[in-house]
Image (cartoon, rainbow, N blue to C red; front, side):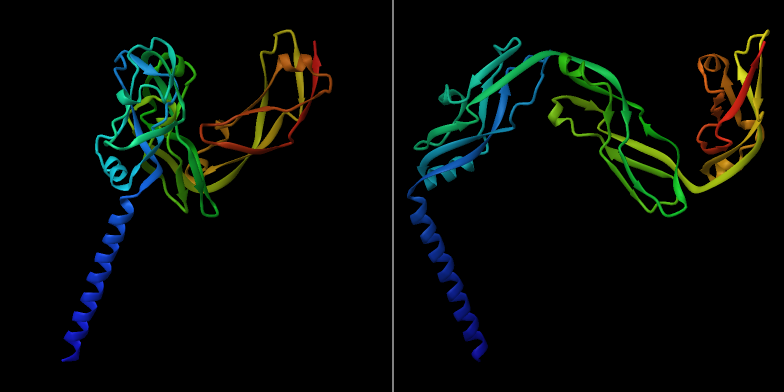
Length: 309
């Protein structure tokens, strides 16, 4: 029978502790306090054809004085906010945050505002416009040894619509996704990801997500031998002798891409106009490859030439 008695004693201790705590809290909340509270900032009467050029604070720090009960009641008020009427703004206006507090801020009776921080709010507006900009993906990828990204990164859609102030959008020429982290993948990546947060830019972005796709393959190299070097834009009455007339080209890409490359897919040339400006007698050929193929090196890297009339 001792166990029920212990439970009763334990319950009494807990109830006594809770009662003492609330009694202590009630006494202390009757005292006066100075405290900072974060109050959401709301702009009202902004013309629907206008938009903010620069960011305004999401909230203001309001230092208040009052009893603990009054301050607590204020902090728990769902409608607590600092309201700023921006209807009169035509281009820009600097508001003093500590003026017209009775109109902008509703607090419980008995709570007095000591200070609002920051003490000024700059509001700059401009005509609201929209434009289409390219979408680029931010990729942070590490692949297993012997594997790599092959080809270009594709985003779906490839562009987005941004809406905001004319002067702000004039400086924006593209938009980005959130960073996509890829680790240890050996196959194609096809992921949905959110776009860069537009909050700091004061713009709206549509859509808010995109799909990022790129291929991942085992890396392979291939040597293409005896690729003929030609001379572009050579006049009919001129002759250029290249020494040697052919080069070897080593290419790299995904195994599937490299396997499909033949000798005729690689082209090498030098430009006649560049020879006219050269004084060394040695030139580096330009290599043209199929899409997604990378040139590792050529042998030789440079060739000699002799120009004849």
